[in-house]
Image (tube, rainbow, N blue to C red):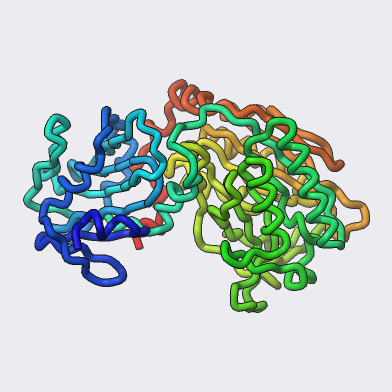
Length: 450
């Protein structure tokens, strides 16, 4: 089997050794050529420019030691435009990221390849653009990225070309949630329709929009979340995304496993692209277990299981990090999303009448300023009949920390015109990403080290 045949329908990761064998989780695929790099480059017919980031940006990666020699590791994503990234480890204190991007050809069925290779000291690949080839290094080590890293690329629509969206219109749906699941779903559909008719391209729903926010009922309202077996709520979200041609960040719903296991219920956000495809799920990483004496006690872990994977979606070239409510209190998660290249963070949430007035806006503005990106939190409307009163006040904050869209506690829709050029403008003006002292402190993306 040739390299091209081997990767044609392959999704995930593969490694080629010095004998020319392609190694995958499914076994060894024999290769016809030992020069795998040249084979990959032969597919990049329209590569027309190379961009290089500041080495300091990747200094954080320099402390890791990798022992595997004489391997090239490539990760392939099928049916996307070409984007090949190569991290090159140049010294013990810095790393250089070289990104080879595609040209103007918008054929959406081309291969997108993400290649990550670390080279010891001076033994690194030299890219010869004129001949489209790499000269080999004598000693090579690899940084084995896992599928969780790939998700940030694979969440984009397979039907769209890789054209970065500089601006988009965002809508947050502050929905009134009651006891009837059917009415909650119908109410959400109507709000999605209204937001899309007003030009929204990315629509976010609130946390637990299909059920009351109560540990006592999460199991009763839970659904299976599976692309091939959608429940009532996710079926509506899929149909609405396709019908109105919008991206939908589906707030959150209680999720049970495909096997119907009720012992593990998750607070899960689903994301659908304009084709109606389920492209990402985020299980709430930090469960809301608090006890403020005399004011509020709530323990999500009484009925929920925490998730363990950060989630990044790609909306036409713009990376957006997903969290749920209590996740916003953990700056490390937001910093990780910043390191993964996000320009916006979105948190469906349901703060209460104790924490909401004190911390809701403060946390949004903090995450926005810390990471120099847009941040939105979308809440349910306040229901006086509910045992849990939501704070409401769905909002969007810009990278300067300004609230650019907000509301009170009644049912409503907020809109914001998101200009992602503001992110670069902020980071150029106050370049904290380049000024971080990673020789003193660091936030490590531990999933990438497994």
